Figure 1 (cartoon, helix red, strand yellow):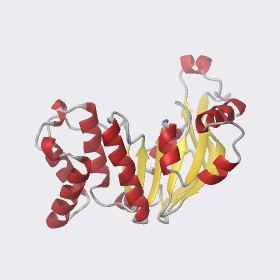
Figure 2: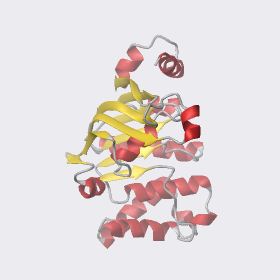
Figure 3: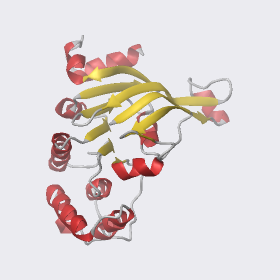
Figure 4: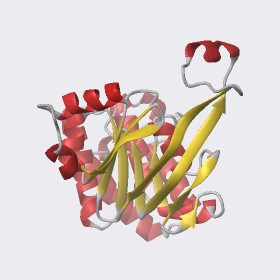
Length: 255
């Protein structure tokens, strides 16, 4: 389970940024995450939807212990991300486009490195790796250097690295980025499988179709604040427009 309570993150601004951004405060900061509260439960898929610069990635990076919040709290499986970061990392898999890969390594070498960091047993690792490679159709390039792989192949390597230790909580920041239709569909099915296994899944996306295919719960973030936080079904039931995309735009414009 993920429990987020009144989460805030401020960044200091440069002089140029102060001129360009409307959310700057008098002390020269911008609040990228402005007091958001939500809960993501086991066995449910929580979608975080928002335009570029809304605060999605900042919030997810705090969940993953990669950023410290200015205030508020986050608990993963009961462990506070600031007080028990190592316990959180043991239980969490985090995918973000900003985390680079090592071009000189092969997928096999890279994923093995991360499995060793998690202390995985060799036989457990090999079985798990084969399952993921088969699911994502990766056997054909598992021994090629990552630097020579396509964008879609690299994204699959990142996903494998994220889930190799079979985490209880999975945080995906735009997991289908760079993937073709068939590969994206396999990721969507993978997320559904995680839900069936009782895992806690939160993902961000800008693709409305993925929201409708996967969401049990939905939060819409804009300018660091939540415009909506509730079940996907309730969101659809209260829609005043003809499509999810139109309703999203309407909420953002009114925020």
